[in-house]
Length: 347
Ligand code: ZN
Image 1 (cartoon, rainbow, N blue to C red):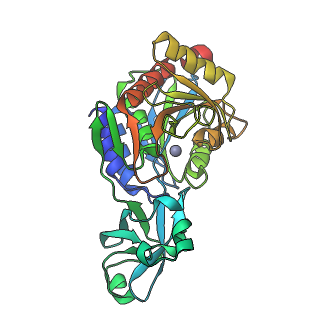
Image 2 (image 1 turned 135 degrees about the horizontal axis):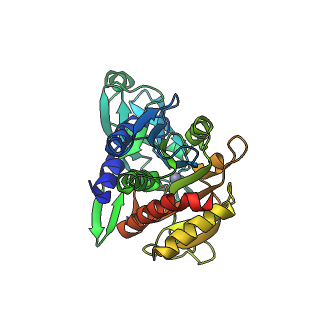
Image 3 (image 1 turned 90 degrees about the vertical axis):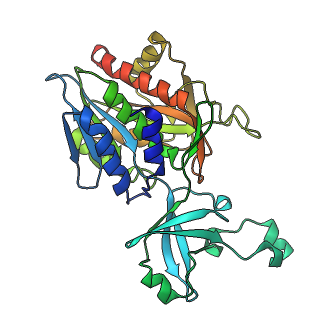
C-alpha cells in the first residue's frame, strides 16, 4: 500500500485517547508483513520489532495512535448529550460540528448544538460559547431513548470527517496528529531492509493526555535512541507571524531542536541533519514550541535516552480537520529510513 492509502485508512479510523482499538488493529496489519515480531503491551501500545545485530543499538520509534476528542459526560432528560473534552481542544471550533458517538452497540451520528444565535442576547453573541453550554443531538427524544441506543457515560466521541485529496499532494482529514506519524513509521518499516540496529516501531496510546503510552513502552523496551514521528504547526497562514510559527507546508519535515519537554540530544540532531543533507532531503529546524511529543518521555526513561523528533508540518492541528502535504510526509519517510541505516556510525 502507498503512503497516502495508509494515511487515509488511519485518518478515517477512530481512536480517541484511551480507545485506540481501531487504529491499533490497522497498525498491526500495516507493520506485520515488514517486521519480525509484533507485540501489544498491557496499556495497548503496539510494538513492531525488526531484529538487527546483537549488541547494535536499540532504537525506539513512536507515533501516537490516539486523537483528541470528547467523552459523554451527562445525558439530559430530553435526550441531549453533554460532554467533556479529552486532549487540547479550543471551544470555539466545536459548535456545529458533526460527530460520531462510539456507543457499545455501534457508532451513532450527531451534531454539536447550542442555543440558536437568533435568540441569544447581544452579550451572549459576542463571547465564546464554552463547552459546558454545548450539547450533542443524536436525534433521540428522551434520556430513555438515548440509553436504549446504547449510549453510556464515558463513551468516546470523535469528529465526523472523511479523508480527501484537495490539491496536488495536499490532503485534508481527521487526526493527522498523529496518524501521519503512524503512517510514516509503518511505511518506513516497509522500505527498510535489514538493519544493524534493532528497531522497535511503537504505535503509542494516550499521547494527547500526557504522553502516557510512550512512558511505559520506553520503560519496557529500554532503548538506546528514541525518535518520535509527529506533526508540527505549519504557521504559513494569514495572521501568523514568522516568529510565532516559522515552519511552512511543503518545505520538508521539521526537526525539533528544542520544545517544551525536550532538548534534542546533539548526536541525534547531528544524525538527522546529516541524513537529510546527504540524501538531499529539505528540512526545517524548529525551537520554542509550547507543546511536546513522545520523545520527551522516551528521553527521560531509566538512565536517559538520546532522543529527537521528525515532524510533518500540518495546518489546523487539534481542530476537526487538518491539512498537510503528502510530499512532506514522503520526505519524512525517506529521512527516517536514511537515519535508521546510519545510526551505528553515530552511536
Ligand atoms: Zn501529536
